[in-house]
Amino acid sequence: MTHELREGRPREAEWEETILSKQTNKQKDNIMQKPKLVYSTFIRTTPKKLWDAITEPKFTRQYWGGFANASDWKKGSEWKHLNPDKEVWITGRVLECKAPKRLVLSWADPDKLAEKSRVTFEIEQIEDMTCLTVTHDNLKPGSRMHRGVSWGWPRVISSMKTFLETGKGLNIFAGR
Amino acid sequence: MEKSEFVYVTYIRTTPEKLWQALTDVKFMKQYWFGVQCHCDWKAGSSWKLVYDDGRVADIGEVVEVDPPRRLVIKWRNEWKPELKAEGHSRCTFDLEPWTGAVKLTVTHVIDRAQSKFIEAVSGGWPKVLSNLKSLLESGTVALTEMYKSNDARTQGGQAAGS
Image 1 (spheres, rainbow over the protein chains, first blue to last red):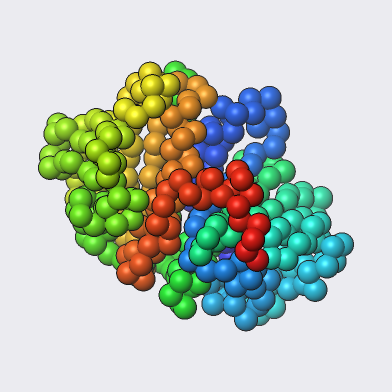
Image 2: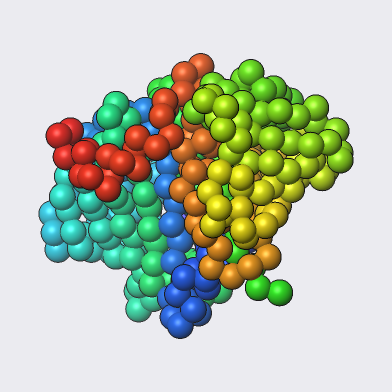
């Protein structure tokens, strides 16, 4: 998704609008200040495998358009979202890390460090499968980051599910 | 006008034709829709109904638009819970767009009222149904077999045993 952000061609505004209208219903007072995206999916895998898919570059590269998430995943540590050439596209700190259940990251474009948002991954085991909920909040409304992640999360998470269930992710930047 | 809306976007490794079939073949639907039976002939203006496997009617409505394999619109009202039925008709749109090696499916469910309990309910249901649909088309097996068990597990902390 960061690929899309940099190239400045965000599309698929419908997702963004959905979230806005959904939030408008629930949190009329603060939605315009703090947009929030929530995306849940159910994956036939274990919490441990799902956790590793998010935090281990050798897995992430297979479904996230060749990108990797690099960190020692300790609270307070830096984390980086790296493209295949190891350039930093997103950076932030590990705010919470409870493997394999909850990971909270601050999230910023390295050229706009003051504009920080937050991503929370919540992983729940439900019998023999796993529910992943990604919440991206503290976004600046209408910003390029807001548009980019609105476009990106459904695509990245769809690809992650495909990767975990079939061994091969989707080509998330195909045809763009 | 005030409205409540839920939109879910998912990308599925399949073709628009196969996805269309998966959305309209009532035998196939049962496999990913937790045993729910759909009664419909998929013509614009025809009646549409979802029935639980024990015979209770879950939802009723009619087909508004059929444009295979691109767009399906259903006028949809809950029949099962009085407080949801009282909210009246909603509109559910399935948009299918081809995408390299896959299909982008957007499900938009909207009702003309603010803070709709019906839309809140479907917001919990769609991720399960669509996760199952994606799994079934991509791997031949569904991810979830029971729609409500997972909710119970969550509220009761039943998932704590696993890690």
